[in-house]
Length: 93
Image (tube, rainbow, N blue to C red; front, side, top):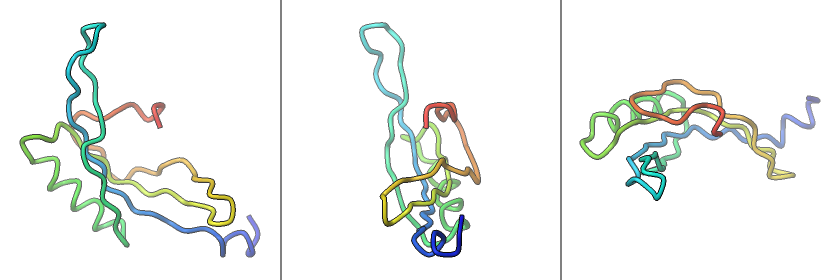
């Protein structure tokens, strides 16, 4: 990545929670995104994930960062800071 490329990148710090999805026709329950919060630091996202994971309606929470190329809109793979409770496999991202 050149210096010019770095100037177009924006980092997003995300806390994302999960709730259980009712069983479908196949009889298997799944996960769906409950809430999503964006923060200006990794610590804020991680702290929120830790708090949210204690909530009765939350089965899991992630705190992660992603980089977005503002010119193309392309988003990189997430880099996780913390994964708490029941969360999707990283291959699902």
